[in-house]
Image (tube, rainbow, N blue to C red; front, side):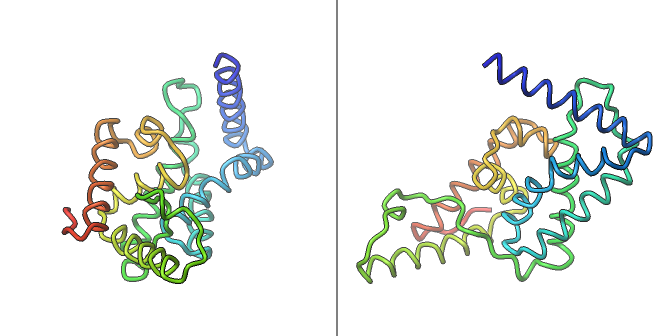
Length: 199
C-alpha cells in the first residue's frame, strides 16, 4: 500500500513539473501530458458514444481546451489534482457534444451485465438469441438513463474508477455519485425485468 502511494505521489509530482514546463512554453512537456492521458480520455469518450470518430474528436478537443486553459490550473495547490481537471473537461465536452450532435444516435456498448449466466458462452441457438435480446434491451435501457447517470455508469464500469475518483472528476460529492450509480443500476434492472424505467 505504501509503495502504491509513493508511486502515485511520484506521478502527481511529475505531472506538476510537466504543467509548469508547459506554462513556460516547453512543448515536449505538453506532448508528454498527452501521452499520459490520451488513451484514458479515449476510453471515456468511446464508452459514452461507442463511436471511434466521435471519441477521437473528444480527445482532440479535450487537449485543445487543456492547452488553452492550462494557465488556470494551479499546480502548486496540493489539494487540486490534474487528473480530475482533465476528466472534467472531457466530461463537459461529452455532454455538450451529445446535446448538439448525437442525441438521436448515441448507442452504448454493453458494459455491465446483471446476470452472470449471460457471460457463459453457449452453442445453443436459443441461448444465443436470448443473449442478443438481452444485449439489445440493455443498450436501449442505458440510453434512457440521464446524462449524469450514464457518465457515472461509464466511468465506473467501462473505465473502472471508484466512487471517490468519479466524485473528483465530475465535481460531485461522493454521496451524489453513489446515488446516481444506484439509480442507474435500479433503472436498468427494472427495465431488463420488464418494469418501467424510473427517471
